[in-house]
Length: 178
Image 1: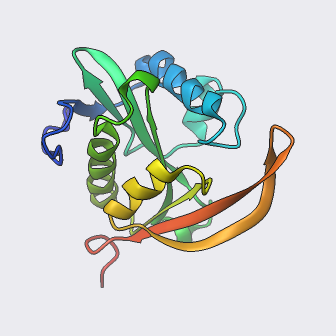
Image 2: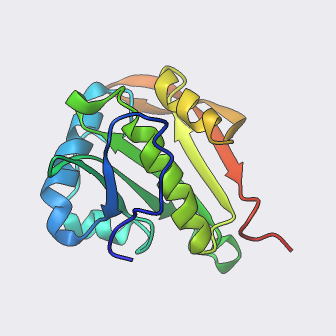
């Protein structure tokens, strides 16, 4: 499948087209990642990595882009939570939306597509770690069946300030069901 047209959870929102990401998309993916980093509310990272590091840290499947009018407006991808084989069906979610496209439903489209693609690839549990202040991400994930399973207090510093994170997870009803 070279287009993700089967993913259709648009709810009448922005008409983004979801497609698979390639290495050639990295400059736009990196730009959007940097915009998310700049908010100080999306990640502990303080700078976007180079392509090689990002590529090595993400699963080769389930790398998706949202495009509108030929412009990349957001991206989603999965990272392994462990290199141990027993956790092969568990992945961490990343969804980033370009600054000028936030609030248009693109995140919902990407997350719906990411869930479907992850299940096609045998992922039975999706998890995320978000700052409690990032209420938009928390609402989006809850909408798609994620639940808060914990809070890590003062887990790490960002810009010299201790930050908590919420751990959310979603168990598939399709993949890993015996």
